[in-house]
Length: 116
Image (cartoon, rainbow, N blue to C red):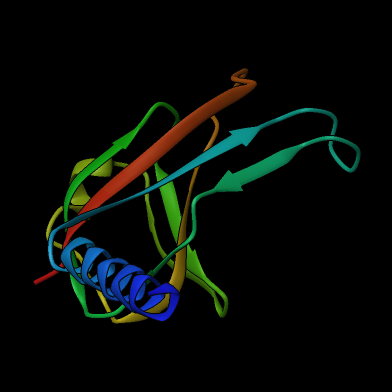
């Protein structure tokens, strides 16, 4: 019984991941200016894509944003609307970070992708 329950749980988790990967995926990030070299922060929900996706929505509370993966910056957008339609290859993990406006101490950004 215990093995059956574990097998069913595993199947449910795999199914849930597949459904998420085939729908909309949101990647968000935040930048906090802080004191440079001391407590400035970049925070993002890194997301790995099982398949290529396309940006369908992009929002930044700052002066645009950048997308990066483990190899570095993938794209930069000062106007978030220009990111719509951008493809992202399978892989990652991808992270999104906003550019701060002059005098701004903290802001966030996010992109939403469709993954077929």
